[in-house]
Length: 213
Ligand SMILES: C[S@@+](CC[C@H](N)C(=O)[O-])C[C@H]1O[C@@H](n2cnc3c(N)ncnc32)[C@H](O)[C@@H]1O
Image (cartoon, rainbow, N blue to C red; front, side, top):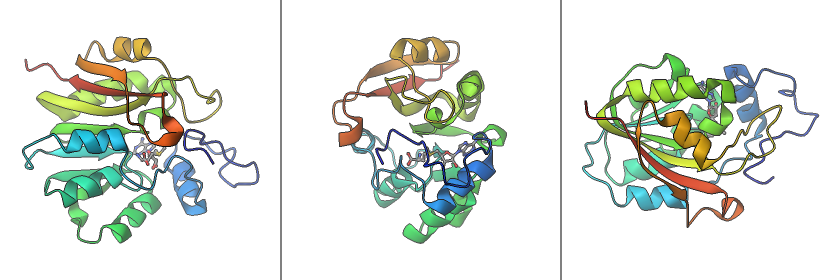
């Protein structure tokens, strides 16, 4: 399955379930229907992580799935990394793969109910998993979770994709800039140059900064 297509075969039992629900995603994890999973940290994010400091930054990875970004940061010495997903099976998979990662920093919760304060939040195929009607709440809640001057950094599809009826849901750079404008300064929103092979030419790397005041 190509990672950009999350569409299931019709004989899978989550077909017909509500794609906004934890139950839907849990079922996908249980059935191994995780076509988005790269099996490693995404190259543009790895490059970004190799340039940031200090390792004391408080980092949240929402909709983390297998949490390759968290694993990479953790192994580089970033101690204050939190992994969040509402599918228990995803988090169990992460804990099995990274057994020394503190369990207290693995949160099973709906992102929209989560409270906290972070310096950096990482976006990787979480936004596109949410129905477009959630986007304003996503932008607003990301703003709430960041300290003034904090950054939301990640990748977005520069493509409308196939998701009329289910995830993934894409978009364009102009749509994203407009969406985030009330909450963030756009530091960068540009085509990613080193995407994983199946996503080449269809991803934007972005850095959004919460205004300092
Ligand atoms: C497409 S997967 C991406 C996983 C991972 N970020 C990656 O790139 O491999 C989306 C993930 O977001 C999680 N998710 C969807 N809606 C969520 C919500 N409201 N709160 C927390 N997690 C959510 C799903 O359980 C799923 O693991």
